[in-house]
Length: 358
Length: 250
Image (spheres, rainbow over the protein chains, first blue to last red):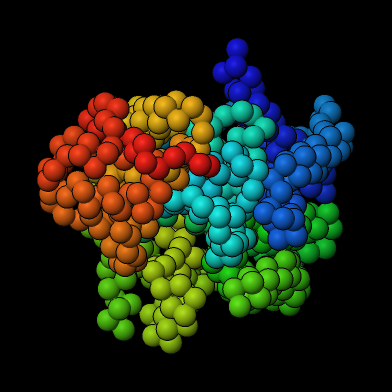
């Protein structure tokens, strides 16, 4: 019974609430673009961004980082958008399911993709991936779950310490501790057994958004793209540094989330932005859709800060380059200006990091 | 420049995927008609590659972090570019494109799950069963009180992933040689081939350890019991000792 309760808790807090919350930003989109994939991506971005915004002040302003306060506050702050999202778009016709029967060739590619994905998930659930960095990240989640403090105890050995600024601003291990606290599961079980089941499909979902835009809705080619991408993940361990290695062997770490989810999301969003700001399409494009992509870019920036401090800095660089090249390609300065505005959270984050390190 | 090339070589690893990517990038820059795609997947990665190769950029990055310069390459969507370029090259012949991609990845890549760091998990925590068993035993023996215990390096990395109620004199920081930490318990417990029992007990006492866990296969000069430790038994190939002279005071 206790196991069932934990499972239900995971399903609700890790899947249902983020998805429902994703309906809120998606209310800006026209109905035909509110697909489950887009809602899912928006929901997790919103979840991570809200967590970073909630946890950072609590970490810095309360004594020893009051995790109990964070748990209560974040729960309320996530239930609100989830409830509003469900009211706005949760009813019949609120979202659009994929339509059109796939052809034979497309079906074969999707079967290959699904088989590889299932294999990856099976391996991640049944196999142990030794990585030394877990001695820090997982221990940080365990300490927080056990003691109710954040980054005030040495993860490797125990004992009180001052705030470890280099790692502390990237609060992804605290989100894991939150899930552990609210579901009753051990943080190591959430990290190693549950998170890969979320992060690997999420990475594929981000790649799917890119494939859809690159291949302009040529469905068999998109399916072939996804099957090939999944195969590359399985055979991408040419060194310990590749994104594919990080995805399959340490998908629960912030750096893996940055390279395998945030970076593809950035490229996907800029392909979308380019479509919206091309001069011929600009008048037709709905204002809501533009608001949606810029909102997502802000959430993406906040999420990069949750991954690692370096990710927050690198994301600004990547966004600047993307905005520059996209702006040139579509001949619109607004792309660069709006990107700069979307980067304000990260500018503040970098200033804060610099001030705390000093 | 040599350092940057070294990092690039390490990133490339054993496979040919980096060369495949460079070929795909050139192909995309020459053939791509869509301006946005060419800009985002051609010129942008080309710029990142150029920046990556510049020594001033390396020096600037190294001021912030020294070991992670390779992560600049993460901003280049290598896999996406290879797959997209091959699919576009083959046009309507998607089946042929897919077959070529499969061949390239399987023959030119490395199978992730053959990595030596991957083993069958013995529990849902994906932690060594020895860690779980020994930690449970120690916490039971201490009557549920927080304790400090010296573990061998092989287990030290996973103990605090299981419980924060066991402190340790050293942890993962000692197992990464390039970090160059020094720890008195580590020096006498892990470094010598034969452990000096009296020296180890002195070190564990000095650091306030209530328990000592050591592999039953380690060669030990002397007996821990002679220094006052009490052997509690063997568990999963590790000897467990309690030190009555260090009271549990957490």
